[in-house]
Image 1: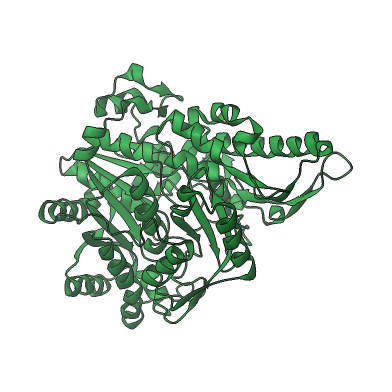
Image 2 (image 1 turned 180 degrees about the horizontal axis):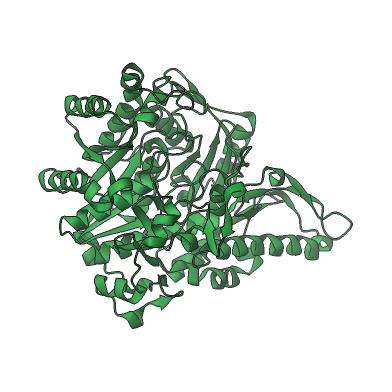
Length: 558
């Protein structure tokens, strides 16, 4: 089997102006970044056409450490829809360099279902991550300078919430001290990964340049010594930060292995942020595509919940269907099988692992959505294993299809595409049934997600969590907007619980909220559950050890 990067190099790419023309976008309307990538102006979004488009959400069971192949399926489904003669577009997030050089090697799909040019998309792309990183750290520098320059006037912050970010996995930077050697005000701080930056969430939720600046102005940096919120607007640099992010606001147009249009934009992680591509890219795709496939990160308990409760709630989006991706290896893992050692058939382990899938199905149906399941098939999967998953779905009255796009491209996803089209034609989704109302209390919202989505028996706050909750209540008691913010829980992706080793469909556990972070720019309250960290570390053998250049060609990306 050829590697992903070998397959990508063999594909015949079309000039990006041709891809734009396929969508009905005039070549002079786009801003090319080389031959095969371009920025598309948000002025082309047509809200009336958006309303007519069929939006399909792809999510997954709780993943293994190497994932479930959700991006590959999303791209494959789009290719399959094109094979059926449908006008289909895919809208995905941008890869992060941290996981790319850490464990994943890339996040542009796989096999014969990729977005291209994959090397550029997986690396620096059009500079969006750089823009977010630079803008975030410029705010950090401006804040430190403001404190330094005004300290003699008695200005100080009793709490500073704003950290720094980098698009790398670097556990050594989680906690640092700045301002040493008399060059500034000594302060304990730390680094998050760029995907966890509030500016990344803002980029993905902003609806216009004006909205972008308004959100940047509202970013909460800390609390003054007299108990008042201190925001970016108080620094007077919101305009400068907007300038840094202006180009990044426009969605990126690329193509698939079969020259299907693809919009790749934004990159928040679903385990530490809201995990969805930008509203603007989604609406751009819906402007030009009759069928639009998008994904939400990690399992349905994380990305899909946030897709509905945050993205759809704020942007007024209504998907027509949810596709849940599963693999036999993932199901076996959730059935108690050590998949790192055992590759043989294990029907009982597979059946036990279906409990994880079925809880995700119930959760998605709870949002009022039609659901189908697709098995992302590997060449080692046996027919009897596929039949077990198929029968489980039939017993639940849920559509099922096998996806083989990794090996066969669009032809391998025709069954899935036809199932999607038929389901959309036959079943109308209900209005989204959100997990909680906007006017619920912060603890009420958190408790509903923990109990209704995760299946927890209880939710509790740590001492720090309680302190942060009381601070929000006290300082923002009269701010109804803050009290109406949705919650965004940062939690391990490997389990419904906050314990990454608790696979399957656990019961009776408690979710402990360790910390609360108020994001007034992206307009959400981030709750840190368990031992979740917003700066990942590297594995013992990072993928960077296998990424190199040979004979002028990049190798090791996937």
